[in-house]
Amino acid sequence: MKTAMPHCGTAVFLLPFFSSFGRIKGTVTLGSREKMNTKMLTTGAFAELCGTKKGTLLFYDKEGLLKPKCISENGYRHYRIDQYFEFELISILKSIGSPLKDIKKYLHNMDGENFLNFLEERYNTVKKELDAMKRRKDMLYDMVTCLNESLRFNYDVLMIQHHDEESFEIIDTGAKPSESQEENIQRFIKYNEYIVNQEEQPRYPFGVILNFKDVKQGKYIEKYYFNKKRKCTKHSNLHIKHDGMYAVMGHKGTDETHKKALQNMISQIESLGMTIKSDIYVYDMMSYISRDDGDVYAQKYCIGV
Image (tube, rainbow, N blue to C red; front, top):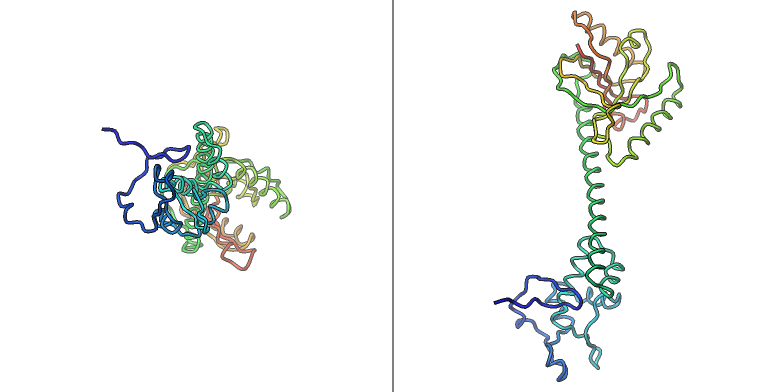
């Protein structure tokens, strides 16, 4: 045998029902016509039924969201028991982030198509919010990972390590052989605006690629910016850092000490009889955010050998 679904105004929702309505205090009967339909609940009894406070019901009444079915001569508000479903609908819509003005609009002008459109709009809004939240979570994870490595790195010690293959997105920096600090910063700002204004945000690692031959000649020109490959990365911007052995060294200092540290790293590699097989990957380590001296920063250098 089919069970009749409770009806709530213009919307029908199949919700968990309680069989203990008889326990609710404050039930009154108002007139013969109401007797034909249903019992009425005082504001306190209806609030108890809905698991809310009387103040919430008074606020909903004031805002025109959920009004009592009648107000007695002495000013007491009374709700029909089946208004529970209207309250529950409001609660559901609030829980998915719907503004009260939108809830009011759709409660008072609701049909199937309108409500479907409303729910689809809310779905798309919530999806965008979740996507944005995931991007923020990923960004925080990358910052924690990077800064944690920076704070615990054994600087100025040459290490030979095996690295798995990495896929990078690279962008030509457009750097000039000699440029001012202001030009360098403006160039980076332009790059940053390009990558963050895309739907898929960049992920760690971040850094630059230096041409090995240039560095050997004392030229420290940033050829490419790189970040972790994204789904939106064009094939023309794809760069593979190959699986293999790499000489790795980190340094924390100023621009001048970084140049000296890199030259020292190359000298050590060559003194070990190793052949350099790649350009120089310079990984940003974000340590500058934990330093008072803005001229001091940390980077990790990786060179294929």
